[in-house]
Image 1 (spheres, rainbow, N blue to C red):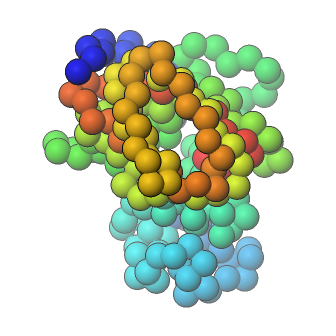
Image 2: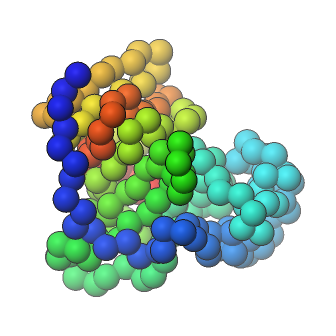
Length: 206
């Protein structure tokens, strides 16, 4: 097993860790109503149960990364637009310590989470997206994700188990990957230390 050094925390989260996605349910419900969709219609399109969607909209449940992605696609949106806590910063440069952060899962013992440190803050109409994926030990995307586009990544530190189609690859620091996004893909950190991956995809989906 490769050794990995705990990363220096430089990004400033835009949400309090104790209340992740406090505004997510409201934004999903608002987007659904703007599109004239019922709970049932959105749930069927996003391949989730109507009861789960109802709990998400009432902030009583937090969707997995894959479920949130399907909801965003069904609403003709993206994860960033639904989960972003504040408006993206203007200008071509983002300084160290100013990168927005979005968290998925975690928030308790035995519940490893994933956070995305935005290299490029996604906005509607943007073609390119880039994030630093930070995976706590044992964290995983849980479900396969499928969408249009292409993805490329570079493992900065730690270990990454990447599933693409029926194949599984174990990557370490310095390893890279590329694949078309319409192939089912998932990932997890199989190691005991934090994994950091520079991950870019087009078009914007997260």
